[in-house]
Length: 311
Image (cartoon, rainbow, N blue to C red; front, side, top):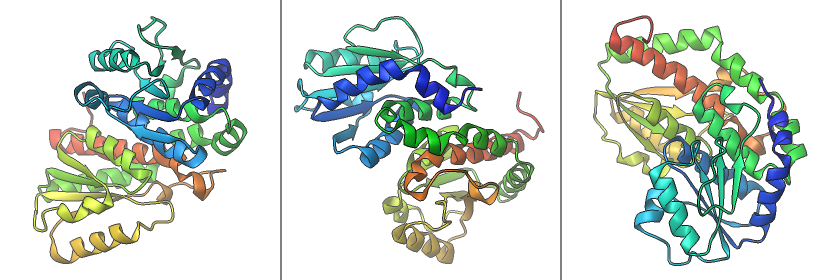
């Protein structure tokens, strides 16, 4: 399996060209659909950390139906699309191209897409890293990786292995089975995914992975949860220090006092300690949350189907 450093190195020339375009832009839009929208959210957190740029995340469908008036030649639009042929993405690219925006496209297909100023065909076999969701995370890292490549590669060189080791962790597997059984015994079929800051995109993916009824929330929307709903559970993505924000902690504790909701805590650091990643780059740890969520959702599906394996 390729390390992130190898992936960055094999795409160095493309990233230099992309950086040149981005450096000349006053506004940056990051867009995508499905799992790619998650990558856009991750990239926004990363660009906020490393760049003084006006960066917006806008869903491709929103660009098509509610085109921002301020789109012009000083705007660069970045799209994620594995195939490059998704209808919404193609239509959005055409629209922003007509507005004279610069267009960058991250894809793993070589077919040229009309209206794109630069098409970055990702090299390095990144599909092998656990799941498509984490693949899109690597796309996001690559995009902002050029100017901070030494920092990112030093601090993330072990991350793919941490992901793999966590996925195979016996204690995590046992926790997932026990939690899934508890959920089934309680008759829960609705889930509220709560994630603050960098954990919100991971909560978004958790809601997509979940085959039951679910909703994704930031802490500021947490108070909207129905206080008394015995068929629901709150899935809380805990920060590395096992402390949520003051607002989220208040709502979280308040919920436990007047509701029968089950609370499921997603805490990958209960099972492993990531190496070489400081607190300021906690965003890089998002894939670890997704591994825990994938384990849990897989076990929930097994319990729901009454089987030990998923066909």
